[in-house]
Length: 263
Image 1 (cartoon, rainbow, N blue to C red):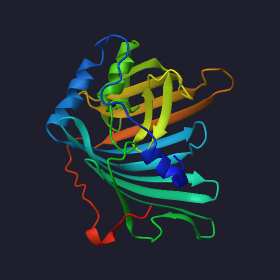
Image 2: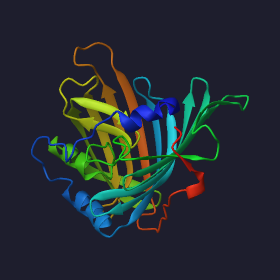
Image 3: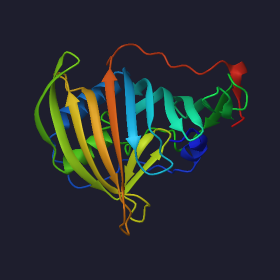
Image 4: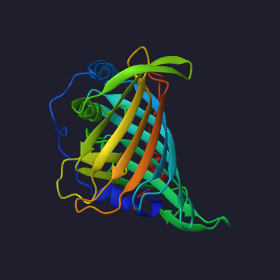
């Protein structure tokens, strides 16, 4: 997401109240969903890194890294640092979400080192918000650890094969293509939906490498953005790597004296 459009991603997207329903499940990813939900129940955690390229404007090529903390319902807390290439320079943002509380700081700096844009206006401070729809984790996120997306993938017929070795771990590779009528982006990540009159929709071709414990190690997705009325589309590729399942992660709010309501 373009750093300068963070607010749009935070506030303007209403997310579904529950799971996004598709065709009947095939069940081929049941063991993976079960392993992930066990991590949720154990209030575990995982670290991740993301690379994303392409897509319709205002999407920008970006890299991100951070960590998720879980509770029974899914991701409860996230700490994400994102770097993107903006028209006016390099954008850098950090967002911390804990339940429905969200803290962020972001800026764009030119090649000369000057601040082109800042949020909040004082460097080092943190903007604060609560109940921001675009931040909250949901079953509509396109992510290899999201049971909602895995159910969608299974519904369209996932296949599995030997995935070789990834970072020293023997893997099974699941893959498939799902068709969705809505594709979009918000602060929490790329998402899919069933809205028929959405601006963008199209196929999601995905691959998921899981270890012997059925936990995801790598997720790769190619999203083809097309308009309902036809015409030229846009392609986005996304790669997510998951490391350190179960390794303790501490995600805390910034100090109170650094928090501001200035966006």
